[in-house]
Length: 415
Image (tube, rainbow, N blue to C red):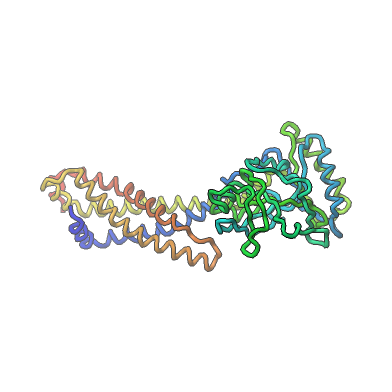
C-alpha cells in the first residue's frame, strides 16, 4: 500500500495515531535525558582505578588541633609506616584516590591545542605506592622533587626558571593532548604558559579523585607532579601492603597513626584509615543509589510505552476489523496485513521520535539552566530514537499478528 493511502487512512482515524504519537514523543524525551543521567552515574563505577586497589590503605584527615605539620613530621611518619610489618611502600601525598577533600585541578593544553581539566596527585614514589602501571618513560628522579605545602607559610619552591617541570600523565590524557604524536618529551601547559611541563612518563590508568568529573571520557584526566609534602595543615598517606598480611599491616598502620599523630590530633578531627575498596564503595554509594533510581525510571518509561502502544494499537486494530477483512477478501495475504501495520506504526513512531528529540534537547537545556546539569551529547538523541522505534515495532507486532490472523469471512461480517 502506498504512503499516500496510508496517510489518508491515518488522517481519517486521527485520534489513535495522535495518542501513539504523543506517547512516543514524551517517552523519547524522557528516555534520552534519563539514560544520559544514568550513564553519568555509571561511568565512574566502570572506570578502572589504575591502582593496586586490593592492597592499598588510604589515610586522610590528619589535621592538628593547633599549628601545622612540618616536613620533618611528615617524613618521620612516612618512615614509621614503612617499618610496619607487611608494608611494601608508603607515601605522604596531596591528592589521593577516593579522597576528594584534598584535590588540585590543573588546566592543561597540549600541542594539538586540545585542553583538559585534570586532577593532580603529588607525593614521593606514588607510582610504586599506588601500584600504577608505567607503560612508557620513567618515574621521577630524586633530584626532581620540590617541597610543597598547603594552608600555611612553607618552603614551597618554584621550578627552576626556564626549565619545564617534569610530569607523568595517563595514557588516555596522552591521547587527548598529543593525538597520535609521541607524548614522551612533549610539552604541556596552560594557554598562558604553553611550555611549563614536560612529560617524562605515561601510566596506563589513574582514576581522578573528583568522581563527579569522572564522566564523558574524563575519568583518567590525571597527572602526577614531583612534590614532597611538608608544612601543611592537613596530611594524607597512601600505604601499599603485602596481600598475605592485610590484618597485621592495618593494625600496625593504625598504631603508627596513634603514636605519630595522636598527641596533636586529640580532641580534633578524626583521622580516617580505610582500605581503598571500602573507600570506593563509600564514595560511590550516592551515585549507586541515584543510578538504581534512574534505571527504575527508564524501566517504567519502557513498560508504560510498550503497554500503551500495544493497548492503543490493539484497540485500533479491533475498530478496523471490517477494513482488514475487505483487504483480505480482495487478495491481501497475512504477511501484507502484518507489513502494513508495522509500516504504519513505524511512520507514527518516527514522527513522534523527531518531536521527542527536540523535546529532549529543550528539556536538557532547561535542566542545565535551573539545575546545572551537563549538556546532553547529541549521540543520545539518535540512540534514544532508535530504541523508541524498536520498542514501537515490538509493541505493535502482537496486535498486527492478531489482525493478520482474522479470516476474511469473519472480518466481512463484522460491523
